[in-house]
Length: 112
Ligand SMILES: [Zn+2]
Image 1 (tube, rainbow, N blue to C red):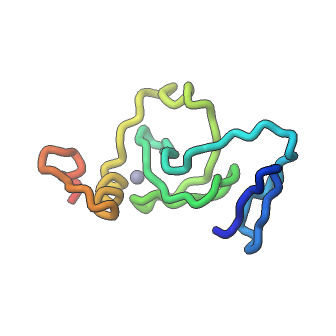
Image 2 (image 1 turned 135 degrees about the vertical axis):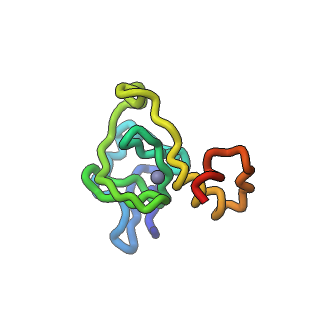
């Protein structure tokens, strides 16, 4: 990733991999914390490494290796089909890559 948005809302994209929808500087920007994004499918929330906001329909590969197309929804709808639980495979990959100990009592310890 090698793009950034200037203070007046312009996108400077030297490699052509930045946002597709160039915002009007007068628009209200909604800033997403990419480190907090947890894609939900099959009743589980997964972890994914993002370096930019994905576009609708773009395919993402989760840390567990599962791949899904992106769609967006209001967070209030997250539990519409039951409260999603952690994908333990993603949790293991995340913890190992972050140097976080996987204690024997954690569900992720069973996925080793
Ligand atoms: Zn996962």
